[in-house]
Amino acid sequence: MKHYKVIFFDLDHTLWDYKKNSTETLTELFYEYKLSDRPTLELSTFLDTFEKVNAKMWSNFNKGHIDREVIRNQRFKKILKAFNIRHDIMARKMSEDYILRCPGKTHLLPHAKSMLEYLKPRYDLYVLTNGFDDVQSIKMATAELDIFFKGVITSESSGHRKPSSEIFNYSLDLARAKPGEAIMIGDNLNADMTGAKNANIDHIYFNPARLTHRQVVTYEINCLSQLSNIL
Image (cartoon, rainbow, N blue to C red; front, side, top):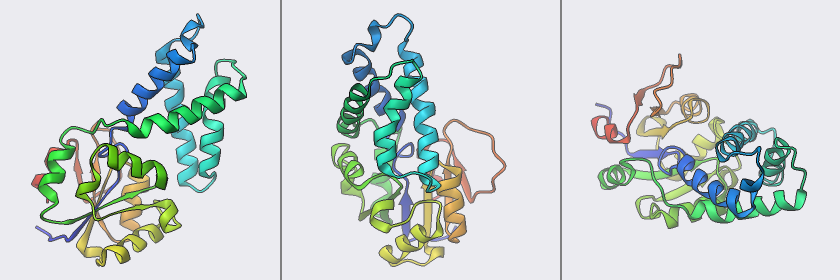
């Protein structure tokens, strides 16, 4: 088995349960902003619309087409507009509340903590994320993940975004590791797997939904507990 020195972890959807934390926050906002009073608007539809709008905006962000302020300023405008609600003040306040509350949620993916406890004595652990500095630091501290990691590398701190090889090379330099000494773990085939591959870094595709794909990856798991079989 290949010997690694450094592990780079994606954060959202890999360790920190973005879907559960986001759903909890959005449900609170749905009722607080009285969207539940609108007879044609169901919570499930609101959540589905957020997921679609959010995924598209983050895809555009990862490609370098938009910046963080576009996500923050336009996300809830687009969601409300989908329900014929044109209320810029409400959209802005919902965005502010979402950004304030969601990072403070603490749900993690199953076995995240136990695997980090297993890996920490054996490897140097880093978070490698396209998320924003201020938000990710809150998530790490509130969910008590920061104690496991030597550092957090973001698109802001590095000046590059996954899947560019530059952010992976920056991370290797920071960790003082060669490509063959590191491995990337993440849930995104493009940002995490293709990015790592382009930097000649082995990678583990975390695929809990068992999505079908044709991409060749170094390893694939559907549960974080399987990491102990590889590392």
